[in-house]
Amino acid sequence: MILERIVLLLGQVPPDGGVMYAETNLRYIVAEPWNAISSLTFWIPVFYWYYRLRYRLKEYPFIALCLPLLFLGGLGSALFHAFRASPILLLMDILPILVLTIALSIYFWLKVLPHWSWVFLIIIPYFIIQALVIMYLPSPMRINLAYFMRGTIMFLPAVLLLRKIHYNFLKSLLLGVLFFILALVFRSLDKEATFLMYMGSHWLWHISTAVGSYYIAEFLYRYKNYEREVSSG
Image (cartoon, one colour):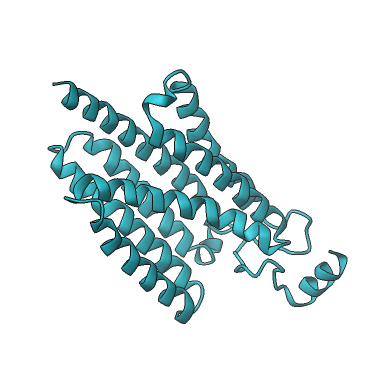
């Protein structure tokens, strides 16, 4: 650990292999305080929805699946941005949210496609294209484009589902999409934003994502209630 710190201080290269953000200062024990603390805002929608559904989680199994993933995503992101010390922390930052977005994508596609097997015709090409983007495009372009693609593969079926249910709960989904778009803007403009905020804007990516997550959970909650009402006649 000491040797890693000496190497990174000389070259300002994070030992986790991740990118340098506007706020990153590897000379500090907490390399990115704003980015680390803002990551914990992911826990706000987790605690809210857990408390709201605490006696009825079995009625909302998909939300029950998503909440731990979002919690782990916030924890992993906070540790990653705080210490920038290990590829393991980078994986803790990436994997829970990646699994969560894939789960959401599959959930929404299953609701709009005529047969479950069609999901593979969409998800497999997406993974291939995303892998090519990550392998051949330079950073940070590849990261931002990967997030954009992830959002598209997730929200496109959600919009189709919205049409299928006659635009019920439009507000929840629209606000979720808008906050995720705003989050991507903040992520993309991190270093350019330093003329306004010395710490950049990556921390606002976390906060916007947390707010967007709340509204997506609200959409899932309302849609599940809608399904139940329709099935009961």
